[in-house]
Image (cartoon, rainbow, N blue to C red; front, side, top):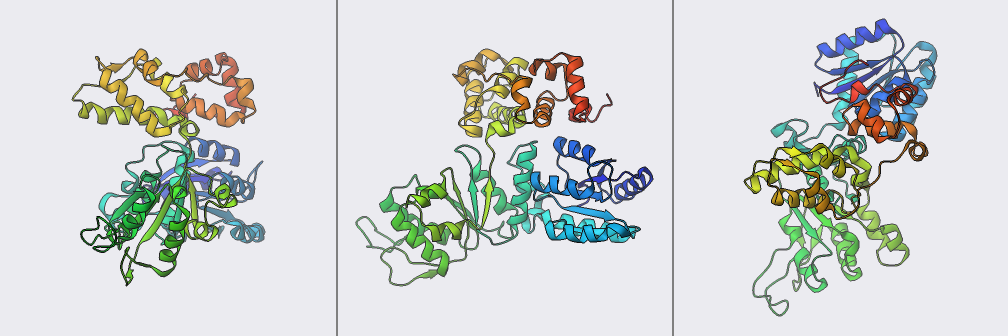
Length: 455
């Protein structure tokens, strides 16, 4: 994965410079910092593909840094650099999830090989990688959010396996898009991807849709019908809104998952199928099990790996990106010249409440696209489409309870590193806002889309 972004952490400036030069020469995009605190700031700005950290650091040490990374980014590989006296600590850390450790002094070739091996763990495998590069598998998912980056990293890890995945998330948060991305990153990418909404098909028809039927099995069965399991043979089947599947059908689905065979309705013999199962739900399946509405044995068959998509308000920095992405596509659909949103219109979108998540945002952008009479979408059209009061920006006193650092990072991302706009949103003067940034080790220049700028 040459070109991958690496974060180096070491308080030895000479070693940091040497490592940076060596890794950049190998084709990596390197960010180097001298402390764990600076590393955490960089992680808040943008998630790297790998962290390479010394164990002995001033302030927060490398082991504590790893614990913080593991809590926030469980799929992010970490390699520790250790002097002879800290080897026992590094060995113990591998049991907690550190990818590996290297003892100083280390061989440059061994370092590059170790990094390549660690990155290979998170690289997509199979046809998707060969056909379009590292990001082709998730090209339909538009995001700059760290929380979304973590979900995608975990999705990439699980894609190469055959494990069943349960995708949780509110309606409209993009569960099917994530399922398609997992399929695209898997060895089954060149085979069918089939999706079925278990809550949208009447119960009497759902069994036939899933498993098929033979001619004469019931009134109206005028010919044999291959079900979706057979249609997805060799590929991936997404059981969307699995929480809405009726209990009698849950029993039959469990048998199919256990035996890898389906029996069409009215048939005397079963048909073998090779299907990877992904499922999705907005319901609380743990509560459904407690209420007897969902089978526990089926739950554990489906929930081998669980991924949870954030709500749109939890990835608010993605709203401008998504809005512009949708606008570009809809300009073609409506054959209009639509360049973007007026600043106050974009602010209204960014600050609005989104109970319908990404689907609702798309609906709003489509409505304003259809009604727009100028290339720049005005605030009035956005307010009309939202139909709800814009969400008020949290002031500093409220935000402090939700962790000061995350609040400031969100504002800087939202304003593209513009301190004046961020301070205005936070209801603070610039001098005080700069003081808050300094206290949290945040450089607004790191958040600017045109690259880091010294402040």
